[in-house]
Image (cartoon, rainbow, N blue to C red; front, top):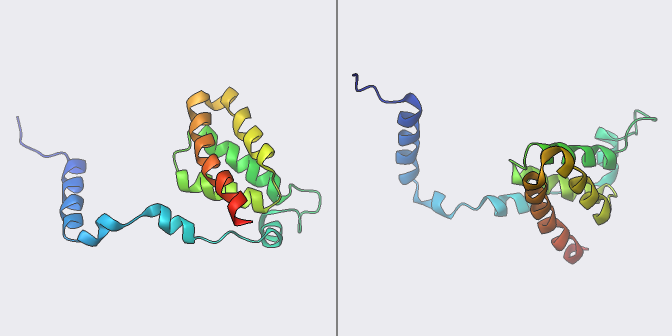
Length: 133
């Protein structure tokens, strides 16, 4: 038997050693960084991925709701992207009911756990959206 170390384990060990050298990283809060990300204005969303150029195409709200369904299908693996997509969908004109229905519909395709996780993340945004405006 050889005493060869798993390359992945070696890399992870090195990363942990580097992280120990930067104690300030213990205080890093990804949600605080996420809160600093601005929401794109509705008109800009329509221009970039709405139907401004493609007159008979999907509007930004619909595209964002489709994106939300895709993120749900993935099991809400990226919580930041789920929350940002919900924020942008609301800005693009989606109602709370439309967001909830989009996620709920995915329970048939993605399963209850994926739908529940996405709904929890969306609820964080929806609960806070009333406070902001």
